[in-house]
Amino acid sequence: MKTKISEPTLKTLPKRRVTEPSKQLETFASPRPGRPFEIVFETEEFTCLCPMTGQPDFAKLRIIYQPDQLCVESKSLKLYLWSYRNEGAFHEAVTNQILDDLVAATRPQWMRIEGDFLIRGGIRTLVVAEHGSPKQDAEGCRRQATTRC
Image (cartoon, rainbow, N blue to C red; front, side, top):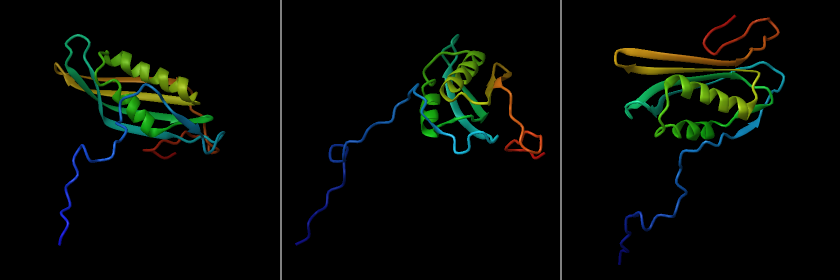
């Protein structure tokens, strides 16, 4: 006789920890402290709320940095960026706050945040905030992920 196998349901599936937004940024030791190299994170899914209207604002964020001793862990960065989804923030303020929080967590040699906010009212907003100065490599140039010296 065949045994009927029931389909899993929410009640029968094992309990899982639900992922939630978090302001906690986790770090790990740089694999090459003292060597100038860049890490680039990009997302086109950043959202926050306009503090004037409560409407969602969407942005492409680009985070470029040269770590010193610490690197930011990417999943914690994702959850951190997600935490802004229901917060009201001006574009200029949120871009600078992200820079401040990442600098506090990683203490990088250099960091740049670019917040490219989608058009609202016919105006596109691009906010760029920077911390520190990039180190040069042995050839005397700063290498970027998109260009070569």
